[in-house]
Image 1 (spheres, helix red, strand yellow):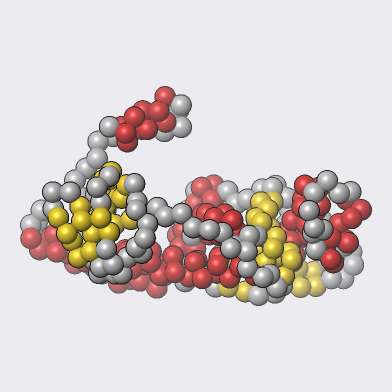
Image 2 (tube, helix red, strand yellow; image 1 turned 90 degrees about the vertical axis):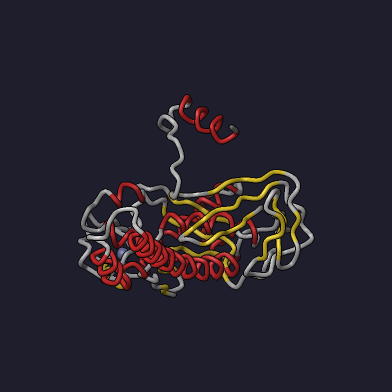
Length: 301
Ligand SMILES: [Zn+2]
């Protein structure tokens, strides 16, 4: 009933459509309130009793409610815990992060992180599985078995992608104090049929979501740079803006000052500088202080 009330609320606020019934076998999950006991390797749920778990569980937290869900024919239990934030020592004050298709993330320091591209890697295997499933009788035992196999592969692809993203976002938010990223229009980019697969395989949206909570966790700050800021077309050395820059051109070359560097690194440096400017303004300083803040870092207080 609580979920139904939430669903109707977002329907009346016109953020979502009319609520639909849940369907058995798709996103199976339920939430339990109250009397749940958690031990190191088992949980006690009402009616069923003690259930052993595969992984060790964090004890010492008494959750108010837990959610049990089924993903790719496996059962998962999840609940919220409260953690203290811990500020880690930062090696770098400011960093800009440019997200792209050829490299997932390029930092203004020149570091490059590649995406897992797990879907691309398993695409043919997945297609083969779906091909072999095509003539099985719907609802039959063999049909069900191959459906589970396909679901498992889908999950494996998602897990590999998530693992890579977690490693990159943890590294960035642990070691940098202020992080500037571009406000990407992901749903708009996915509408481009040619690039949709490659973009979806990168997980840009998830990247930003992880950065948002991890910067809070490790005491750093995330600065979202406006979507219309021309980070890739501007020269990071003199600020001259190009009228156009085709995607095929991998090296940024400025006609005005002669500055030359990798296209993605140039964009990342611009995002970094924009993050500095926005931080300076947010601190109530004058824009003349920008270069000082960039060299010395954000003043105390
Ligand atoms: Zn220039």
